Image 1 (cartoon, rainbow, N blue to C red):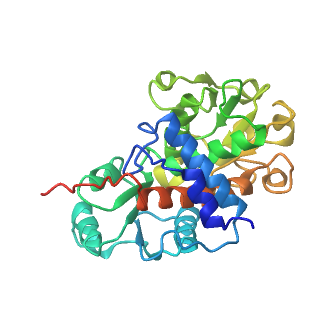
Image 2: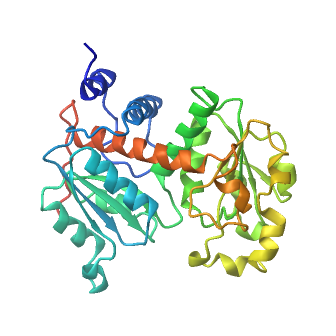
Image 3: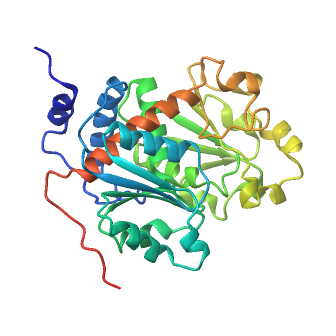
Length: 330
């Protein structure tokens, strides 16, 4: 008799726990943490239509002080798939009325929720909140800083495509608005851990100061950066963060840095085309490449995002080691 999906997951976990109580950054994640997250995520992906009871009687709140479609819906559906009670705050009236992030988070924490999924336009806000609540805090993007679950789902997509356990012989070329990208902030940390060679291609105005200190190779000519790359990762120009003031026009940017069929052909013939979304068609990536091209893994990233977020919600809300957070008293 075959095992039930829940038992298969429990067997894979087999006494393992994450070394962290929150997911604020990829920095503190150990190799064992990353392996555990991916092992569990792959099994969740195998049972994508199964409804689990693993987090039954536990609740989570999506606390999104900044707009989101993909990340919020992904976390919400992941929680529901684990049988969690979920609710979402898309714009907090309390903060607009002058309440601090900490007071808002502590109010929600008082409802005995197990997880707070936090997105803000301020870098460091998720870390600050995590120090003052008992719930596990998962950073869903903080300013220009990090977006750790995006980097994890991206890494899983790459590793599974190439059927490898690390990126030591892989070239990842990231093209676009590096300066304002929290996706880049987490990717560069995680991909360096996994041993990738990371190239960035962007106008100088869209690179952060001292970009070389991130351990990346800098290119201003996108076609040079794309040669023999195993992953082509496009980032959109983030106009809501003022990026349009760093380039002449979107049309000029697209001519210089947009990913076309001709440019993608410069990469390795098995290269993945990736994008965190939302895609600006015919600006970041030529429209025909987005979902119709076999090299595009953009929708695969979305699928892996659900699996990774289920993995993290189960691991952080159900610990085997008995560790708990002691909230700081203000």
